[in-house]
Every structure is written in structure tokens, then in C-alpha cells.
Length: 173
Image 1 (cartoon, rainbow, N blue to C red):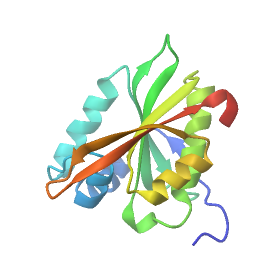
Image 2 (image 1 turned 45 degrees about the vertical axis):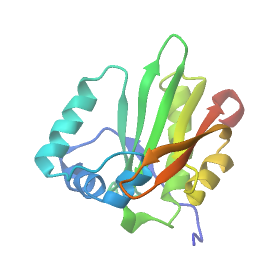
Image 3 (image 1 turned 30 degrees about the horizontal axis):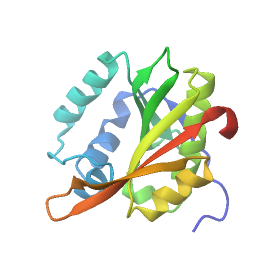
């Protein structure tokens, strides 16, 4: 468990982050927790994925870095609706960095970034209903569940319910 709060910074990805992105994107369990379908993940695949993210004007992808500027994960705002001032949010933390407070700190930093840098008023996310730790982090950050999609994600073995959550940023940051 966490004794003191983790310190994180959000920054644009750099070349040194490729190995961290590759580690996260090649971890099948993490990908399934993100409602993604794992397809391996060589550094070349990851570089192509990063290039696509950079080119997407409705997406912001940021590295989550620890106090030594080492990558511990990433956050993403997708489907950014600039006029409506809302977006979809996603986060992935490297398995070796779990249970150190990085997820909680990264969500807080990301919500601050969404409001102050992106001008968003609302952030939405989808999370597997059985991912209790993530749901708790989101709830503590100000998200509320607005619905549950039954049998929404199939991981290759079984179906999972998925919660749709939202945070109204005026009230959370």
C-alpha cells in the first residue's frame, strides 16, 4: 500500500518512453483491463501507434512520469469535442508500478490538465465493472457511474460488464 503520495508529472512522450509503452501495450492483462484487444506490441508497432496518436487532432496522449522523469504509464484524452468541451479518458500504469499511488496521482494530474490545458468541462471513461481498484480511484477523483453496459467486453474467455463514468470538472478540480 502507499505510505506517501506518489509524485507524477504529465509530459509529451519522448523516444526513451518507447520501451515503457511497449511493455504496457504487450501486457495482455493490462490491455484487457483497458478494454483493448492485445495484438502483441513490438517497438515498431508502438512507434506506429504513437505516430497515429500524434496525428489525431482529437487525441492527446501524455506520458506519466515519476519524480525521476521515468515513465510509469500514460494517460489519453480521445474523441475530444472542443466545442462541447468533453472527452473520453484512459489511463494505463505499468504493472511494476501498481500499488504505489501512481494511478491515483495520474488521474488527479490528468483531470487538472483536462480543465486547465484542454479547457474541458467533462471527462468520461469506460472501465470494467470488475476492476474494483480502478473504479475506487475514479470515484475518489470525482467520477460517478452513470450506467453499466451488460456483457460489453469479451476478453476471449468471458464477457465483462463495463461501467460508464463521468467527472464534471468544475466540481472535481
